[in-house]
Image (cartoon, rainbow, N blue to C red; front, side, top):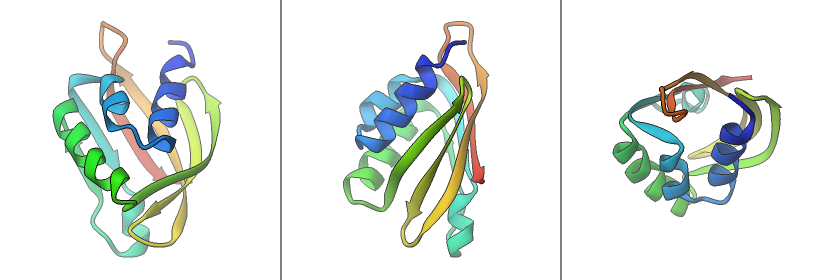
Length: 112
């Protein structure tokens, strides 16, 4: 895979565009984010691109989740400062799996 997909994901997050974000993911995708636990909040586990769109639609629009100063590290990885209901944490997003159509099947976000 080339770096287009990671760029699309990061652009969608920074632009707060949940529809564009969901379009990068397969129907049966998994999105796991362990960074909220750094602020004492539950980790985020999302299954399916419709759930992903609904979750990020509200969280990005309300400012509950903010992505700032992203840096693309590779075709599968980027780091950024993420605010999860509170102070910023340093996060790394890794695309771990694609489906046969080139859509993202699994993403894991963890503290960098």
